[in-house]
Image 1 (cartoon, rainbow, N blue to C red):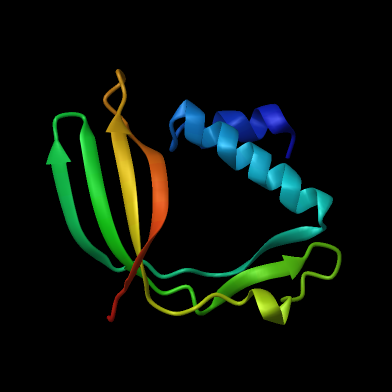
Image 2 (cartoon, rainbow, N blue to C red):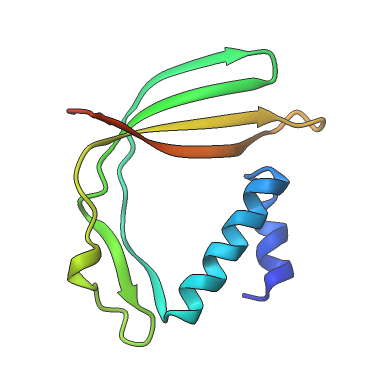
Length: 113
């Protein structure tokens, strides 16, 4: 989809800084003829809320996801993700009252489901 359309869509769910990072990442993927493949299953472990900031800890199972060649839509085997790793996501509540993703980061600690 066109960049501005993608920006409008993503801005419903992510902060402005996060949207910019996503758009840059999408452009890099497109230049390499890559696209997302499969699915990720989230297993939320804990959520803390302090004012307009929420922190979510997840034990993500990404073993059924990876990257595909965007021309063939076939999985690139070396990109298949590992199962069960810890992820921290920070959410911010905007002036409109909506929670949006502000940052995600993979943590060093493994997790088990």
